[in-house]
Image 1 (cartoon, rainbow, N blue to C red):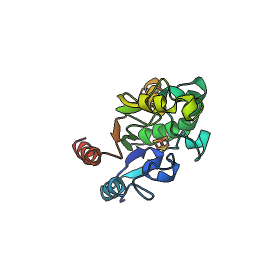
Image 2 (image 1 turned 45 degrees about the vertical axis):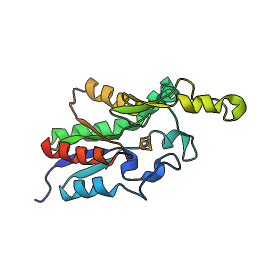
Image 3 (image 1 turned 180 degrees about the vertical axis):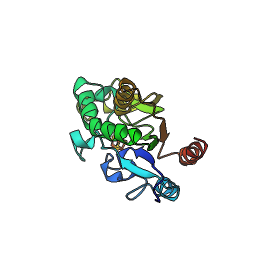
Image 4 (image 1 turned 90 degrees about the vertical axis):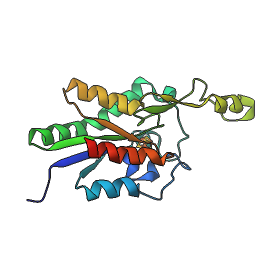
Length: 185
Ligand code: SF4
């Protein structure tokens, strides 16, 4: 039997950059460096759903965490994760190892260590609506995105201890760090 019963869950856009807000991807389709490593090491890979594209579609604007921090979006995040929770439980019960969940730092949904923030971002776009001030107020802060927060809560409620890892697409060193962390864990 060749399977090694080792599984990792990835945020959706690591396997499909087309879910990202248009203009944001630095790769053509899937993140080759991360995937090559995971495939070479024999991981089974589960792709989580993209919480943003399944609500707002591909023509959405980039959001900040404050905009997504609503009961409606949190509810959506919970609902789309439940089928994956059930898979995780079943795999663990049958002796499989869930190595972790890889998120996307900087995302208002999938950030693990960093997310994007602004109290001013939103409303109409245009000079007459203060777009310059809104842009200046955008910042990356330490913290999780809404989807990751909800996943973390659900795992905790189910007494599941699963590690979170992350990459930042714009910082290649985070991919090297991730590979090192996976080797060490
Ligand atoms: S970071 Fe999360 S919300 Fe953003 S495109 Fe990737 S999977 Fe979707």
